[in-house]
Length: 379
Image 1: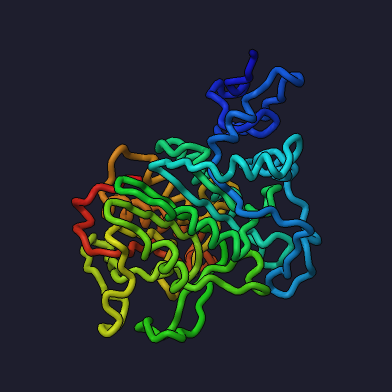
Image 2: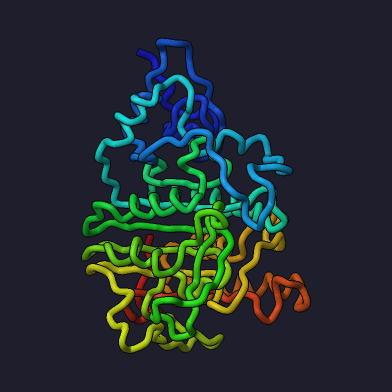
């Protein structure tokens, strides 16, 4: 029986059903005639469970008190059906439920979450570019497309919209069933926030938070919650890297140690929680490391300085630094990221918002202290 096994654009083996954009070059490969193509059915068996339920008649209250739905926003046509979505036509709900729940374990798994808040005054259109850049990087680093769960407002599947419920569900999926040797990645691009600390676990009296697309209705996700879902369950031998392209993100995973590095490369690990809270922020034997856009009091930025199109300064510097060398230590990686961001700040001008005194400097935090200039970075 004939199958359409390779992409007509990049010639790589297809990892998505025909009719969907290729995960590598985004060429749309049309399905063959009825009865001739079985690649979609076979590949669905390997696409891990992206959804616990399918929502219908989905609406949410927009952030910043704006009108409901997506009023006033015209998404680029190419984004409409979702680059990473499975087709919604041709298969019944029972078919999806049968294959979504198949137990599939990949040693490398990732969640990429980009929130654009489309249709609003504070929209972040660069979040889509950020996610696509990270997706390409992870594919190059050996992650399989089927093991990367993407949440953006451009996805046709409502379970992949970056709502509070969907983000938390994706976090739980990422860590569930983790085994020694697993490498996990959680990436977020969107708005960040700070709220008064109600639990007494913050030295500065403030919790950091991320803002799902429906946060005005369903609430923000506090660093306490992120830690409980992503960090605490990590078993021995499992490593989580979180890349957070958002404001106020220095300790957004509530990890106990923040690495303070000066421009000469000297550093020390700073304890982030009061002594009575020990051993708060720990894992169940695994390792959690966060690379964030800025300190807890700083703003992060999207800028067109790098490519001519808006992209997150943290995302661009991370992708460029990781892709520029086969092997970095964590200290080398952070030094190079900071250099890339500083050069962009200088190019845009010291009086620009991106280069303000409150502008960003990428940060490193961890569940454990280590020698950053000897420990190799590896996803």
